[in-house]
Every structure is written in structure tokens, then in C-alpha cells.
Image (cartoon, rainbow, N blue to C red; front, side):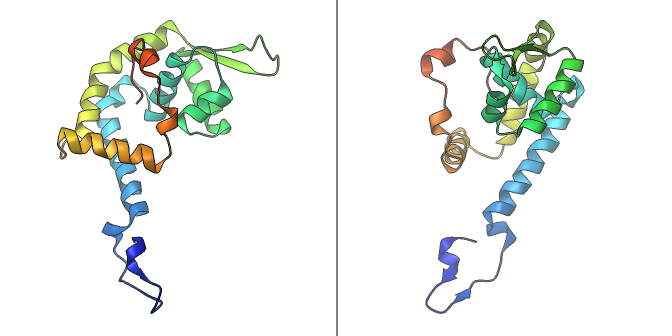
Length: 170
């Protein structure tokens, strides 16, 4: 439902149309993306959340668990569970923070770097599948609109830092 669907003068609304409801479309898009991820990258034994966390840790060595969660928009409990599973797979290493004995920092392991290399081409194909029905311009526009909607423009990586990074976020 858009702002224009409400008529404040009469207090009436247009009939509810799920296919014109942003929250419904975003939810369906999420499930579609998860299904495609499982089909495209599932054989690597990593989930989309684990891949996002692995990329964030790769790009931010010795990041705190809290900051890693902020980078991929997950709560502390979920991040802790993901890290436990990723440690079991030897994809990341957790260490006590030298600055704060109560905090933990996370670093990608050699096996984690190997995983990023292994999924790279399949992830590129997956990203293209997500926007297969869109032109390149429409795909770029969709990503820009979502970043604006989610107020993520300020979270963008600085161009100099981005050039030095091997891996793009999932």
C-alpha cells in the first residue's frame, strides 16, 4: 500500500493488493534470494548469513563480535551462533581482545579464505541470477534504492579501501 492509497478526506482506502505492498514484496524477495542461494551455493556447505559474516570478517580483521553483527545487521545471539558453527568448520578464529579482556575479536582463517575463493564464481553467478529479469541499469538502480531505503549509503566502503579488497559482500 502506498501513501497515495489512503484518502484522508474520506477516510477510505483502496482495496488491499499484496502485489503492491512493499513489505510483502520484500519478504517474497528475501525467500526467493534464499532459495536461489541454496541452489547456487548450498553445495559449498555455507549459508547466506555465514557467507555475509565471513566477508565482513575478511574485510575487517580483528573485528569485534558486536561490530561484525552491525555490519551484516544481525543481533548478538545470532552472530554468536553463526560464529560457533563457523569455528567448528574452522572458517574463523575468535581471540580475546588485547584492548578489552571481556571482548572477543574475530579473524578469518586460512580455511575461511579458501572458502571465499571457492564460492567466488558461484556467488557471482548467484548475484546475476537475482537480477536476471532486470537490465544492468535496473539492477544497479534496485541496489541503490534498497541502500537508500535501508539508510546504508553511509556504510559504503571508501573507494581506496574497496580497491584493496578481494571479496565483495554477499
